[in-house]
Length: 337
Image: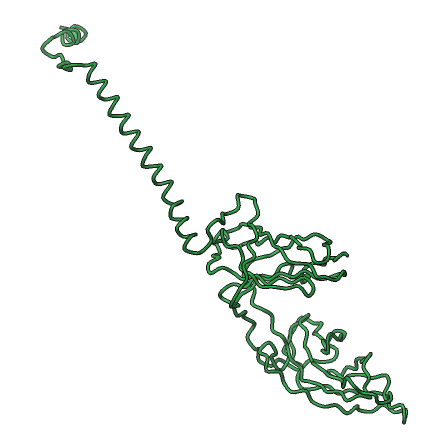
């Protein structure tokens, strides 16, 4: 018997046939119903899993007192909440530095004054120290000779922001406070005043040295410790006096990890003499890695017209800060009548 004949006999042999279902139609119907019930159970489980985070999120929001605040949609702006701060975070500053080699006059930039303070900074890529008090000289109009002008000594400030002496890097100002008697009616005795800083004479203009003058010691205001992020501010160029200025601040997290917003950062904002400290709207709870988040801000404009500076700074619970438009110290805004 050849192979083809053997295969035909085998396939037609009734003794080798598989037993049939008792009720083929009923069995198929039962299978369909079973699959439908299984699919419905899977859908219901998925829906429950999807709802669970929302319920948990609602509970957390309620516990934090943020009910009603929802996260901004992708590409949107986190709304302003205007919640004042009762106890401010303490900001951290750079630790005092050890003394560096003394500054030389040739190492220093031009001097300038601001609100009773002399400022000067190194103009080379290095570090140096200014200490003690400088000498002030002027031409005595009664003799025509240049002479040392008598001066008193201002005590050192107890403010921890003042670090003595002034150990500074290029572009970082060393500071020295001075005071001139406000009620002096003495006839002008001195002219062409100069202050000697590290062997370099700087003109000291606009100060009546015939009145008693007091000089402090050189100190530095150490910079704040910046959080590892970038902050930019977008504000209208003008605002009406006494009206709210609405602007936005964008925080960029360049890190490879998310940055937590818990505890919620505090925001210090100022527009001229209008200022306040508020909680940031921390609905997002974190800044994802390599992301940018924009926050809406509001501040009242001063009552008087003029050109003022808008400044913004976030203070995190660890004492680090994020300053908007750090290079320009904020943006200019014109207050109109």
